[in-house]
Length: 232
Image (cartoon, rainbow, N blue to C red):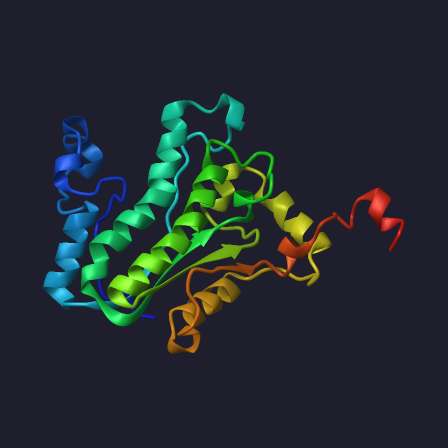
């Protein structure tokens, strides 16, 4: 795969008017411009005209290591803004330049529906919102632009983002022991599913959460539990 161009983007800000003055003057943004969602969409339109595929693969929870009861309001809202509303904003601004029959996907996590201790800071709520929004966006984008919208719920992977929660290696081990398919989950397997979902092969699939986790989501009990393992 060849990366043609990389655009600067901070998906927390929809337009230049939304950016606080202290952020504009922050050295992090020195020398860069046109990095809000609206500006990025306008640049892509100017340089490429239209697109077929939009992928949302970003999240941020500044208090992800905190239990929910210890999460501040600002930390919780920051997680929602960066991890779920950012998808709404991206699709809102890019939908006008997407070709009919195109597709958009995002990445979620099973903490949206199951309790994962240690995955805090409002991130489980953000993923739940992302999955709910996927259904609504599938309807709205489907009716408005004939665009399909799906999300992928991947199992534990040793990615840079996953390492932020601090116990990813234990989650990978847990998945290997308890999933129906006892094998390492590969990033390529998630990528292959993404490629399928945005291709014509998935032309009738929209509004879905697709699990790519070796079947771990189907399990109701941990088979490595002493109580359960004695029955197997």
